[in-house]
Amino acid sequence: MKTSIDKKPARTLTVADRCDRCSALALVETALPHGGSLLWCGNHFGFFEDGLTAVGATIWWTSGAGSRSALRARFAMHVAVESSG
Image (cartoon, rainbow, N blue to C red):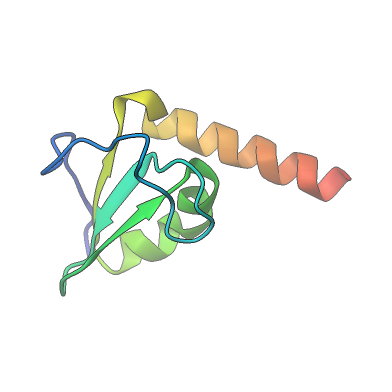
């Protein structure tokens, strides 16, 4: 399935919005094709991005998150630091 990337979410994420995995600040929101939505920090979005893409989730990220490539770079750096330590 093709992932839809829409830069105009239904609502704006705020500092009160937290990642559904770890409660960190949410930078990305995804809507699943069969209903429901999930909020993600940059780290967990990077980890689950391929799976979300595979199921055809619609993805929105906040302006504070930067570009999609910036999120990927931060995730890769985080993984590199964890694996070296």
